[in-house]
Amino acid sequence: MAFPSRGSVVWIEIDTTDAHAVQDFYGSLFGWSFPGMPAPDGGTYHLIQPAGAAFPMGGILENRSGGRDGIVLSAVSLDVADDVARLKDLGATVVVPPSKAADGGDYARLKDPRGNLFAIWTPPGPPPSAPAGQVDPSAFVPKLGSLGWFEIGTHDIEASRTFYAQGLDWRYEPDPGVPGETYEGVLVGTPHPSGGLRQLATDQDATDYTMPLFLTDDVSATTDKARSLGASIVDAPTVTAYGLTFARLTDPHGNHFGLFTPPQN
Image (spheres, rainbow, N blue to C red):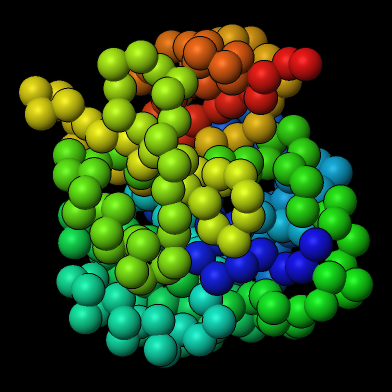
């Protein structure tokens, strides 16, 4: 197995005005640790390290001047500047132009045509196209509490599908897991989906959103724990037609996130 392909969502950033509160919530819920590293602005960038994982899966970006709270999905890019130019031509808005990330990689933030914030990122070290022999495949198997899926909820699934297909090479397949709901699995360089596009109902009050989903061995128990820590339940634990269990929540700052457990064999 090689490094993740271009377009793979492998990193999250949590924007916050209160890094300690974020660490308290997610550290208590999932057992994450938060090693610090110097940030380009002179502050500290706190990595998100799931227990037992070979690599961090994200970072906490603290804005003490009162910026927005949010969770930003980051997709792998082989050339950030080229991808930014392509995405702009497809209707994206540049929020942070190509620059150096806190970890030394290349980075940019954009908004898709639906207004969803996302990032593209070239990790430091070996490029995503590195030969398979350089990396132990088990390093990419999600651990409990780590990022294992992502979701984009949209009122215009056709527009979202087209944008990400042309911009990040995403492919799609129908997911019949929840009867009566239009959902498409996102395939990025792999034979199996790693995320999904969800069509929001026209009469649904929810705005478009992006969110990470974290692997757990018991969605109901983790949902209860999250609620006790201050989270709100958006969609209670649900079992799909093929046996996957999931729930959608918002954390104490209003950020969307989800939980899932794969089908049990």
